[in-house]
Image (cartoon, rainbow, N blue to C red; front, side, top):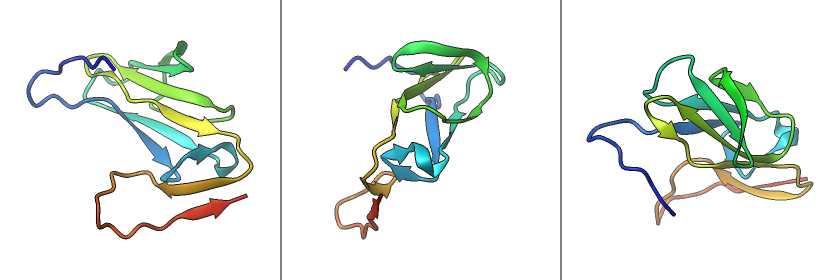
Length: 109
């Protein structure tokens, strides 16, 4: 996909998922926090690629399934985070994993 270029050393926008498992599921009471070096208080949230909340808070509690992104003015659009309402999920830690890592899996229903 297309990826905008950032100035050298610039922090890109990311979404912190709590609890820190992927895929995120609604019944876990998921909160998303938009992190980036952009202008404080200028967080725009997108749901399913449509602008959903202009000048929203940095942290939101998710109540409907979908694919979420955030934009902090000055640091750009975050990678997407999917929140599902699946009744049975196999979850992995929501962090980068490297070959050789020991990984805890959660089977949830």
